[in-house]
Figure 1 (tube, one colour):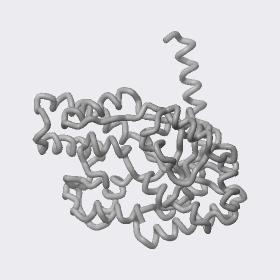
Figure 2 (cartoon, one colour; figure 1 turned 60 degrees about the horizontal axis):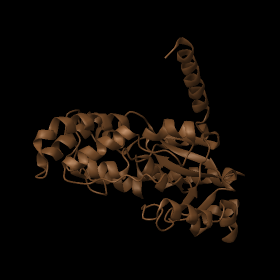
Figure 3 (tube, helix red, strand yellow; figure 1 turned 120 degrees about the vertical axis):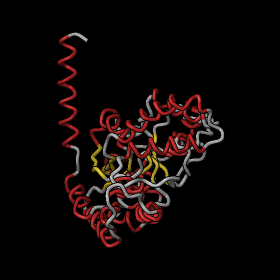
Figure 4 (cartoon, helix red, strand yellow; figure 1 turned 30 degrees about the horizontal axis):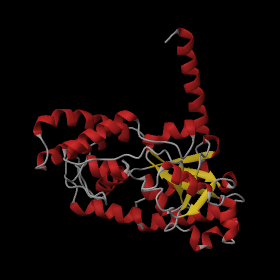
Length: 321
């Protein structure tokens, strides 16, 4: 890299950082910071009520989507809808899964889709997760509902815990060939670092910025599960209404969105296409692991204690209400 390119890179990164800092929604962030999430039922209910009231009072309400901090740089550079795992992480994930006797598939159809809801428990749930489901279940060999086969230790870093978890799964598996252990551990360390290094986010998009984008309530068959070919997927998307047409067809206006069942979390709103980063704001949130560590200290456990078995389910219940 020559001197000119070097300094241009530094300047561009600095400009991106400034832009990114301005994209924090300070009002919603302050509400989250005031109450936290996963503290108590009362705190959670008050936070969600205040968020809903704030959103309802906006002339231009927000939709939201919770994402791992892993994707933040991609989202701030390219927008929502096109981010994906990098090639090294895919290679590492496939290698580790294969060593456990599993074949892990990652879709390459590059369908631009963002799953959103109104501000509420669904997006906080997604915002607390460290790994995409496929990485967690296939690479770390855990359950689809993210139950831990071993308990974290109070004061243990998230990266240390997941590395210990991976080694536990290696030692417990009858399928695993121990000759591959060091390579799997090295690849696992890299994956764990990449997914645990950054704060998770909930991204916010004003409804006015979505009027022309293709949209649906819930999933379109064949798109999310990858069973439709790329050509079939594109055809299905082209046949969808725009977001404004979708709302109009259900007679939904912005002042009544929280009262309409189609806008609630069990449906969700799928948005097809790229949402430019200029139209996105965000807040930072705790991950589930951070919640567990905080809760353990609050309950009187000391550094080095093994967390009780019910603490994981207690947090999970809280964030999935």
